[in-house]
Length: 250
Image (cartoon, rainbow, N blue to C red; front, side, top):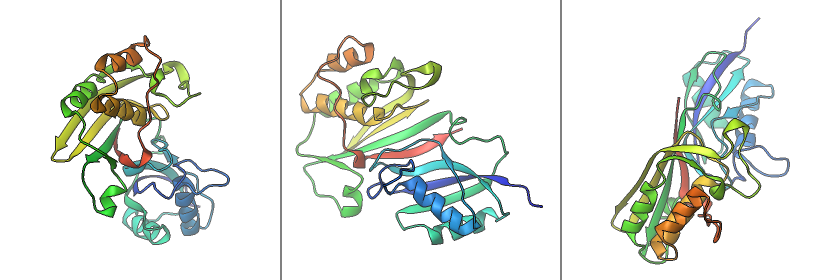
């Protein structure tokens, strides 16, 4: 009798057609699509656990999931067979056998998100679907300073989706290990690497940085949100399509 083998799988997907990662009763989601493809492949229902739950419209370049495989399909063959069963906007990149104790969510040490911006330009469709295009050039130096201010341990309650108070003993406290703003020509990218992100946190951080870049707010406003001394105006939410989960570190 075959014993189930735990598999870790790296996925990439475009989130535009999906109502987020997590399976929902009446919506197309990435998790449901992947699980349905795996069920077709193995001939039995398969449940997967992801490193993080991306919101509706958010993309992933390297989402990590795990599941218990009831049949011993070699990793390379699994990737090929799964891609044949998946739509073209979801791709399995790499699979490997892992210990039964491995957990893609609980064992993740940090996640890397990248938010892409552009202004005063027209992008090819395949880039535009992953980029927030601003109507005019923002103040780049101010955005760089605001991004750098995020590094460290903070209470990110002001940047969480309404009603999301965090889970467990950590509450809304998170640590940002790296926050980098990079620009070239009429494009920019905001890189955020942290030990965890609250629901909507990455997009609200970016929305706040863009507000400062537009001149609508000052750096002191962002600092007040981080310190809990400012509550209004609230942190705005950047559009989902500019955000990509770039990687997960274990």
